[in-house]
Length: 373
Image (cartoon, helix red, strand yellow):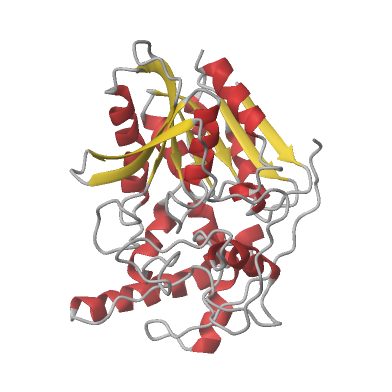
C-alpha cells in the first residue's frame, strides 16, 4: 500500500448560534475544526438518505464464537467505566492469555465500531474489551458528553487494571486499540502507562490538533480564540442556571449543500448502519460534546513525547482516502521504532469504522500476535 502525497481539500460548513456569536461569525470561525468530534459540523438541515452498506458494513456484527459479558470497573478518579468483555468460547480459563482494550470514536459509544473490533479480535483468540469513555454511553460522568482528555486516557489504564485482574489474562500481554479520537487518547495513556505493551490506532484523529487547527490547518489562531471566548461566555450562562449548549457532532439531516465529510459521518451515525442512542440520551445530542468543555482539547498534545512509548510497538492504520490521514502520518513520523503505518487502499475515514471487507483485521491480529506473544 503506497502513500499518497497530495493533500486532501475538505471544506466544512458550520451554522448555529453559540454564546454571543452570531450565525455568520460562527460560519467563519469553526470550519473543519468541529469535524473531529466523532462526526462533523454544527449545522442541522433537511433531507436524509439511505445508508451505504457496501464493503461488508457490519457495525452491529455478532459472533457465535464469542461470549459477551457486560462489566463495570473503577478508574483512579473513582468513576465507573462501563465495558463489554468479549471472550472466545473456547478460551482455556486455566491459562493466561493476551488481552486488548478498545476505545470508540470521539462522540460515539462502544456499540459503535468498538464492539465490532472487540468481537473480531476475540474471534482471533484474544480477550477483548470495548469501553465507553467517561461522560459517554454507560460510563459515569456529569455533565453528559463532557470533554476531558485526561479522564478519557485514564479510562484505558483503568481498563488495563480490570483486564489484568482476571485470572485468565496475562498482565504482561495487554495491548490497546483506539479508533478515531480514541487513537489519540490511548496514545496519551500509553505514554505514562508501560503496562500497555502494544498500541494500534485506526482512522486516528489527534483531537488536540483538530480543535486547534482544524483539518489541513484550515483554522486560524484568531478563529480558535473566538471559539474559546464563546465557550467562556457560555460558562457564565450555565453557572447561572442556563441550558447546556452542545456543539459539533453529526448533523441530523442532509441537504444538497452538505459537505462530503459531513455526509460520510451522517451515513454512519444517522442511519441504521451505525446509529445508536444510549439509554438516557437523545438522538439530538448523540455525538455532540458540550461547548464549555470542548475547549479542553486546546491543551491536548497527545503526540508530544510519543517517541517515549518505544520500544513498545505502535501500528497506525488509515484509509488512503481518509480526510483524517494527516494525523496518522504525523504520529508515525514522530514515533520511534518499532512502528508500522498501514494504508488501506480506497478507504475513507469512516469506512474503517465498520466495513469488514476493508478493515485489515488480519494485520491487527498479526501485530498483537507478534508483540503480545
